[in-house]
Length: 348
Image (cartoon, rainbow, N blue to C red; front, side):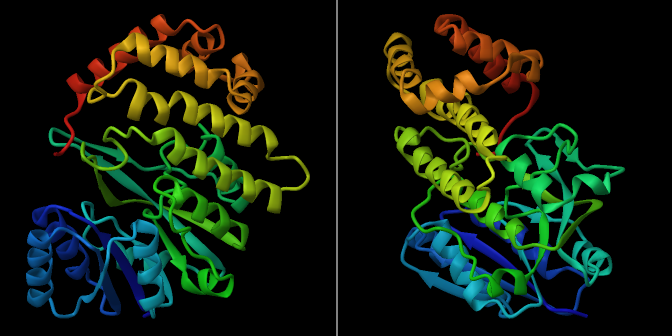
């Protein structure tokens, strides 16, 4: 049996969430595993709880560092890992019983990454995200790189860019000196995965719901961010650097512009311009968004999109953005946010 290093960065995670996470890993019917827990400078009261948990389970490799961000925390986990394979788990999530044994059996010698399915967990329901009959042609490094920049409907529910949901051969990471980029507050995981896939031989997919992604309203993926534009522009620059370095034939140029457009109409609207915790009035925010639309990089992103490639609400949002019909865009997005709250309830 090969050793699997499970890396869990933690920062101000509720102790009950972390306990569920840790116990789901340690209870695996897989004798050769190590759990590396990296405390990224959490609040002192929470630190006490984390240390108590580690005393209860002394087999945990516990690392404390001053707060430096999740990239540095994951890198510390990689530095401490000794396994043949690596798996990342976020501290408020958990994994299914028997997952490690299942993955070890499915991880063939020629594979560098084995992807697997997951469930999106809300307080009132859990939604399974598993590809039942995966097409092997879709599981090539380049197809998956393309999907990171522009979601591929054929892949369906696969969360390609996230660090979780995959078992990785550690030698691919170490032989190519791959690490997460310190300072990237969002998207550091997708940038890492782009580079990881660049060095992979073969990848595959296991049709099992092995990971439970807890949707927490206070996580960085969902909470209000006044600096989201500057934060994401650093990430967009990292995507651009990757394309310029590895995809010199121009085959990824349009995908890069699509990623700019997706961020413009996704993270910017959801985490700042239309977030419920933004204190600014709607008219001020619409004017600010209009100025953003006038910037060269975003004008290019919008103009590069092709309407016939978009369906349903995506096509409607595109027409509203392209024609600067921002009042209608605001009304549409608000109605979508309201509808979501009737369907699912996030964790706190």
